[in-house]
Image (cartoon, rainbow, N blue to C red; front, side):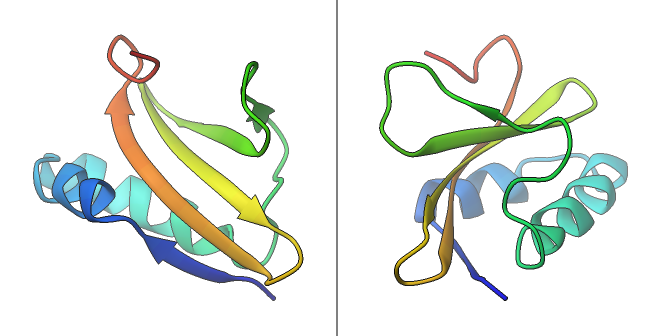
Amino acid sequence: MYEVLLEKQAERDLRGLQPDLFNRVIPEIRALAENPRPPGCRKLKGSSGDWRIRVGDHRVLYEIDNRLRVVGVLRIRHRKEAYR
């Protein structure tokens, strides 16, 4: 089991989501504690440990620390803005 931590920016991103999208994103983030590499996740190119999962048109960007068993959620962004 991994511990899931939200960065300050991810918390701000969550607060800005519409309620229906918020209710879809939260279970996906919680599921990262059980399996930080769920089906459909992708490792981001050009980074050492950053991953992403899709939730509709939005992306949850996160990093995995296997040694400490921590998943750090970095951002929750619309796909057009996620990789800037």
